[in-house]
Length: 296
Image (cartoon, rainbow, N blue to C red; front, side, top):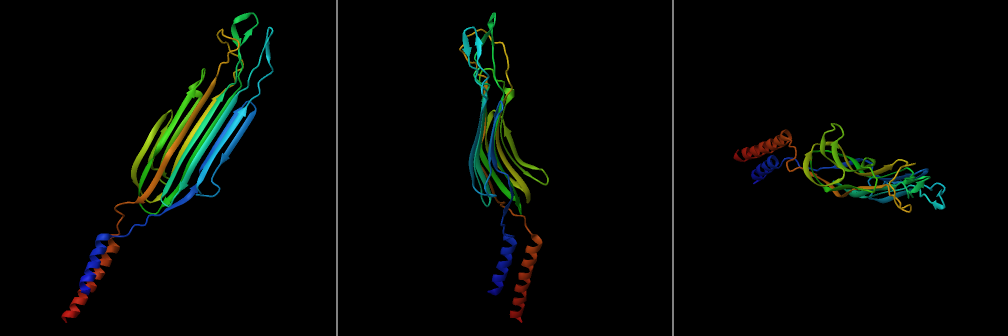
């Protein structure tokens, strides 16, 4: 009976191989949200990050700036107010880090305009108007970034949604608008990418699976939105109602939702044939020696 037990144990060792115990060790936490708004000389900034490394992070920030208009201008008996430029930015994130997972959602928004540009006739020229508008700039940014190490090969499952878009007002130039949402997972030593995606003025649903070897990795998800408008001091416009205001503004946003990176032990862990074989041979020899003693 002892012989049967020992032989069975040897066979189990040869078949089962080593037991996998995947461990993910976070090395750095660079999650943050930022919002910055500028209009003329007015400047506002707000930012936040986790109060402790790897803590659950839920935060939203915003910034708002407004430029005061110049003194009123006159045209004949009429007086026209000029409104200054303004800008606004915001960012949000809700994220967490688990034993074998990283998850989160976030967004960024930015908008601005040159202000109310009341049209005023030039003296002696009723077919053109003088316009004014101050400069503005704004950006919002939400970054989910974790550096971690794994002690053995692991399967990864990455899912989530990315989106980014732009809304342009009359007179806006899309070159003054930036929006992007991105996800990347790469080995920090070899710089080999396991997954990478970036979009602008588009959306993307992510559903990716793969295997990564032991080592250190950087997982980064980012939403970034920015607008910019240079100063408009004077411009010629077509004839129109002097009470009209021409909106020159930009608005854009980006975000990620339900992003989840999950790690798990691979179905076939890296075997250790020498150790396993030696253990099996040792048990086999013990079983043979027990049999010989009984025969003697």
